[in-house]
Length: 157
Image (cartoon, rainbow, N blue to C red; front, side):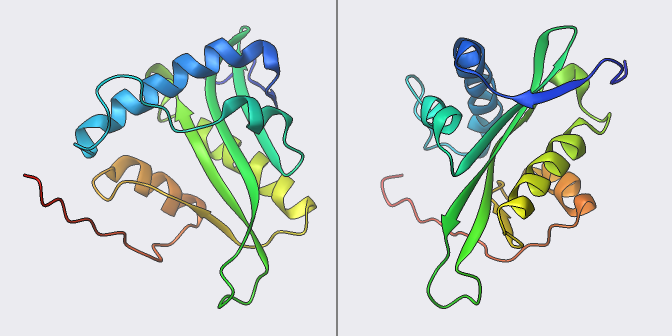
């Protein structure tokens, strides 16, 4: 399998149902990494807002008219202690299983970072589960470095 015919484009409202299904695939893939995720009716993103919000860019990667990858960037205010006033937050980084390992994540990241830079952003953040080694490797390969580790205590166990 290869990336011949890949089209990366801005998501449209007509993609909404497909994006909702892909979000569920992403959540299903991450469920083993987070026992707190709801078994049903779980969602991460306000997809409609990401499509229409001027401070966000939600993109899809299509091959033969089928969406096989997603990602978004959202310009957010940074914490007051940081030198940069705004940063780009990346999310909904998803590649269909049969297209993983072909560099599609890199193509999506390049597009999102370029868009962020065109908005005056030079600092980019994303969240990844500590046990998601393949995603961590992909982000490190792109140039990301670990910067903050979220820790959790669940006392109801």
